[in-house]
Length: 322
Image 1 (tube, helix red, strand yellow):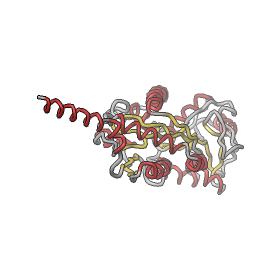
Image 2: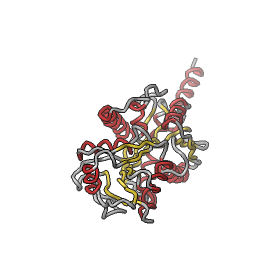
Image 3: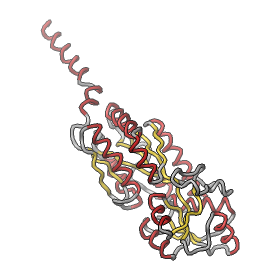
Image 4: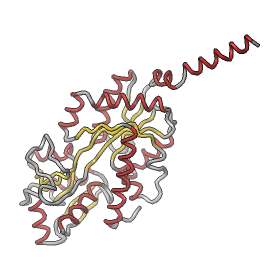
């Protein structure tokens, strides 16, 4: 019996020693996939590669970005929700994660219950831009033109119920104007038509709009944020123009629900360390992003608040779920 008791004690001690702390130390032992729901080369892909590269260096395994676009982001999100909760399939989500519950009738996952937040990375405020051939140089110019000829000024978006669409709804309400929404299936065709002059204006991310503003093809009218961007100090905000429109594309890291707490803690700490790196902050800031580190709990609260915010706006805009 004494030998049995000693053996049992040894087994228990071994179990304790190989518990959460040891599991955390062992993770990751193989490459980790970061899924994104939009095409390669876009904002989310760029942010994910910057973060993934640094996570690889910190944690000693490759963090590889995999793009799986389609169905407004629901295809990739559903795949991550169903993935093994072992920390080897992650997702860099964006504002669509909070929008989709209101935009789609039957998405095959729960945006809150099926995911474990790791941390918030930051956001890029949307810029209201216009085709440079138009005689508009500010948000007030646009509002005056829209009031003179109601329903004639057009604004493109990356799709019905997207942030770029709902920002237009916000401006319509704030300024008391009527203008025409032109939805596209993605950012590339919308940008092409905007530059070609087939659509007048659009709310866009800085990473996409800045190069065209610099070449003179687009004119920046205002920033949809409470404060100005460092890289565009002369671009006024919508609030400064008298129209309190606040809309952005945001991004943060999540794992499938049920991922071990020790693994989440290790990822959360590593992500915080990455976002504290001066070169990372500079790279993100230079592309128009505002770095705003939040831990898993804070990010979870943020997601919940965004779902409510966008849900209310979708109802106000009369967007019917697809």
